[in-house]
Amino acid sequence: MSKLKVFITRRLPQVELEQLHEIAEVETWTERQPPPYSVLLDKVKQIDGLLCLLTDSIDKQLIEAAKSLKVISQMAVGYDNIDVAAATARGIPVGNTPGVLTNATADLTWALLMAAARKIVEAEKFVKAGQWKTWEPTLLLGADLSGSTLGIIGFGRIGQAVARRARGFDLKILYYSKHRKESELEQSMGVEYAELDTLLSESDFVTLHASLSTETYHLISDRSFQLMKSSAILINTARGAIVDELALYRALITNQIAGAALDVTDPEPISMDSLLLKLDNVIITPHIGSASYQTRAKMAQMAVNNLIAGLKAEKLPNCVNNEVYEQLE
Image 1: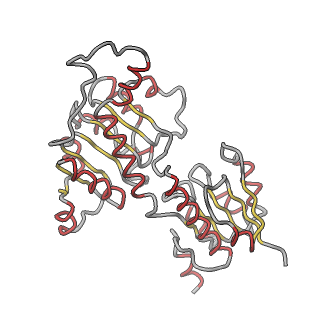
Image 2: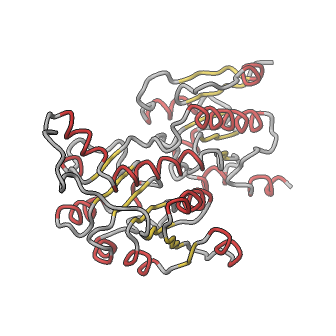
Image 3: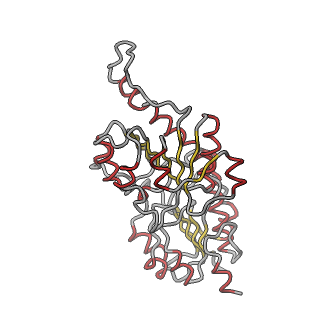
């Protein structure tokens, strides 16, 4: 009996593949850039399992072309690049890797927040450019965290992890979420619920942790920036398209807000023609929220475990469309 066939769209870090190799022939795309859509479309016609990333477009056309596909396993928490409805219609389970990157992303959120608040990137460039001549009372003044207000938009695992870290900085913490959390959780974490407009107008730092949907697409727009303090700083480690980046640019050059720090952009990677790249009061990192050795290794292993389960016709440890199993009952 011939082995099943698997395609992995990028090299994986520190992951055990022996069990996968026992049941499948594995092909891995080894280039730094994602496989072109045309290549991916050709590959899926021949495979039983697909392990993909957020950078891969797994749309209806591709799913319908994959006649033998038994499982789609995504090495990410989010899955807005996958047409889950089309996969469900075909009875194909879709896996993701939730929970594992919570702390790493919360840590990066704080790294970006503090770097933007204290102008760390600007200061480092200043020194390397040979501009540091003496100590100056008004040089590169930033914002204090202690006594400030932090607004968290999206209060799931990552939003709550950010809130736990905030308590050590003596910050007032507001949060906005589609569904308000239980009062016991609010009290235990020392947070207050606020409507979105209130959060935007009262916060010194606004950090985004919502998932991308039709409701959150360009949630942060011109109107949002008009509500925010002129001293406010925006941090986005969620999804780039939650922020209207042209509106952000306008807000930054007109001093409607003081600064921004982005780990995600729209599109990704950011276009080198983007006006944001010309500004000193914005920090942009290349989607490294989960980029620690330990976290990426765990994500890869979870994705492989989902893949193996799907190939064996077993329930995925982490499945985003459990309806596929109900269809089989």
